[in-house]
Length: 338
Ligand SMILES: *Cc1c(COP(=O)(O)O)cnc(C)c1O
Image (cartoon, rainbow, N blue to C red; front, side, top):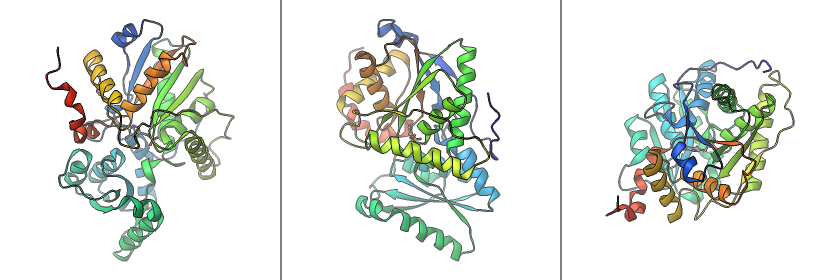
């Protein structure tokens, strides 16, 4: 593999995460595919999930730049905001969260953890958030500067040229996992929400010339948006780290069609898949990201998209705390026959 000079990194995640075979699922699908799961939901306990890999580089950059505050943004149940809040507490950063959506009557899931971790939280209505996000970042950045503090603004999902390093490193980790498991080639499947995980894996497989196709199942927006976002993140990486490596030819692959009713909202079929997989494999998905992507992957396996007999590795990006605020959607479990 070519030498890559990684920027400073604060080790936060418990790495490598396990690569596990899904034997009962593979059998249930008729044995045509071997399926695996890369357990990036196990990067830690409360600070679990894919955002932790990105935050290793983001927090190191914040320290290097002399910042004492992290400002970031996301939905009310953002996993990224929760991870940032807890990491900030652990490393001694003040954390301010700009959240899309009014404060709910009850603290639940990730939002409860944001507050537990002592983050400052500002809620904005959906329309204002979308229209004014850059101004809101500027407002809070100025606010902390006036108090003599220095803030680093972290974009949605920590998806940019800096956070991308997290999934460049993960791509190498997965390549080592495949070697240990004696897999010669594979498909890697992930949920894509702000594009950074997909961008890192896509660039990583291209840089290292791995016999792997990376597929992002989008949980919001559409294929064009993510193709553009992946290209933007990779271009930002190149601009910020020009000495790292020239960007090789790469192919981003987005599978659209499984967003359902919208970001953070899933159809009943997704909740049924979550229940089915939990019973079959003891593996828990969330309705916002991994459940949607996994459900989409199963449909695409059924319709033959992956029919080249390569193994499929689903990258489980975490999100378990987003399951509980949607408990009402599991009403079909009441009196479920064993
Ligand atoms: C943020 C998130 C994703 C999407 O990752 P991006 O890098 O933002 O595309 C997937 N799964 C979970 C659980 C997440 O929290």
